[in-house]
Length: 334
Image 1 (cartoon, rainbow, N blue to C red):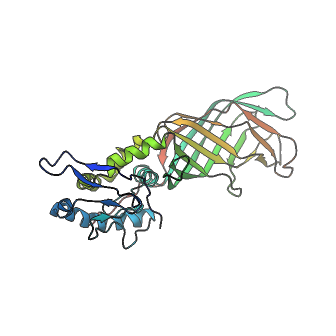
Image 2 (cartoon, rainbow, N blue to C red):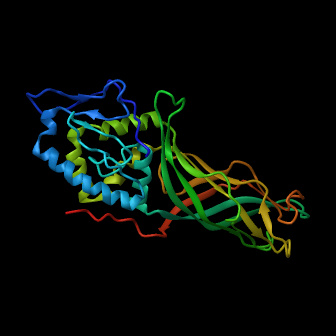
Image 3 (spheres, helix red, strand yellow):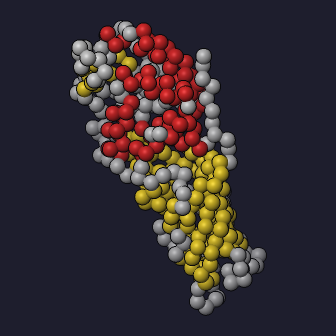
């Protein structure tokens, strides 16, 4: 089972809420950064802390059932030494304790596992074989993305930390109506796979540190749990800002038709990669996505033949339109 591996060796866990008590509640011991955090016995014995731990253990089962994440029998168990294990789903917190997993679940809870986006291309430049010059055409369509698992890579042996999540384009349509383009119609080709789509935080180190500050102090757990129980959607939405700005990549393969080429099915020569290098929110609102290179369409029967349609200057604007699947809900144990 995957485990969170945030390297906090030597990091202090402190509080200002307990005047007269030891300020240092615990620390992550060298050589045990992947095994858990040591908690002061006086905190561990508190009735409120123990009640919260038992309730959240039940909540973790509900969240695991919702997200498909597994929780092992020892996950989050409070042992005799006062340690708390730190797997992806923590039994002392009802949500993933790695940044990528948290991001993925947050977006699924707030917006649903599938999101439909409106797509417009106000000034694409279209060139058709056999036709002199180019045509400036406005396109309109939709794109549906499925949210998949989160990704977190960090630690002493990782050259570049990564925080983000994977996605999959499940539907894509883009139409350029008009005689000049031959009513060019582009649709997703699900029979051809391509590079995975996804989103990556531009400053993962900052996100990892901020995530630890917010969620790795055990004295905050009862309050975090209460906020989550009160309104899971509002809880997750309030923390999404720590994962932006980010780079968002949407990769698609398509089929197309145009009356300029009757009886011909067109396909993209290379995978189309739409990218927003500095998105500040997801789902985007009027976010600009541009292909990394011009879109070239060829005859499916002649994949190495001449380019029949070339689309340049495609600055697509993606906007959150509607959620195609209702937002997920969690049945909170009594």
